[in-house]
Image 1 (tube, rainbow, N blue to C red):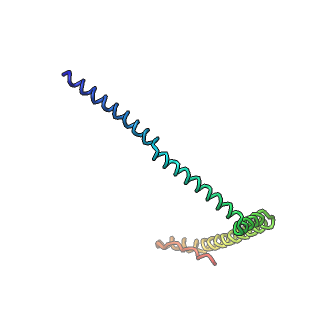
Image 2 (image 1 turned 90 degrees about the vertical axis):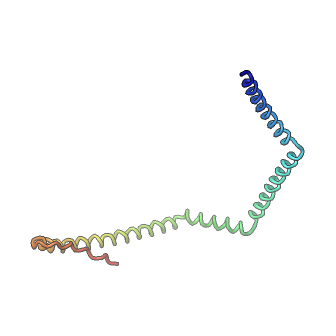
Image 3 (image 1 turned 180 degrees about the vertical axis):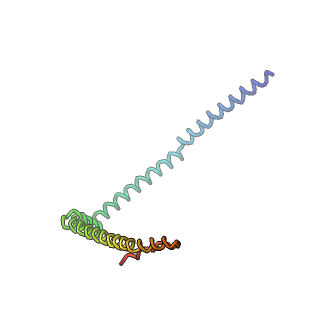
Length: 142
């Protein structure tokens, strides 16, 4: 019975040693000359990429195409801010709303007229005891 606690202690000790060895192996690999060289290559590559992107962005910013884009964006901004543009938008919106309201009023008027015309005929049909469906309103005029 005494062998069981001794073997459990040995297993626990071996797992502890395994953990220490893994940590030491990783530390040694991280600090190795090869790892340091790879780290330096990655850092150098990232620095070079940053420099290239910065240089290309500066070249593009000074290009005629970029200047044309800037000018066009400035002109669009000025047009949007102008009172003439705002007035034009308000006028177009007002006209569109008036047209929609006018057309809706025509539909309402047609339905109302249709309902008042079909009301007497419905009561006549009800008096006769027939099950006729109510007449549908006419289609709105285009």
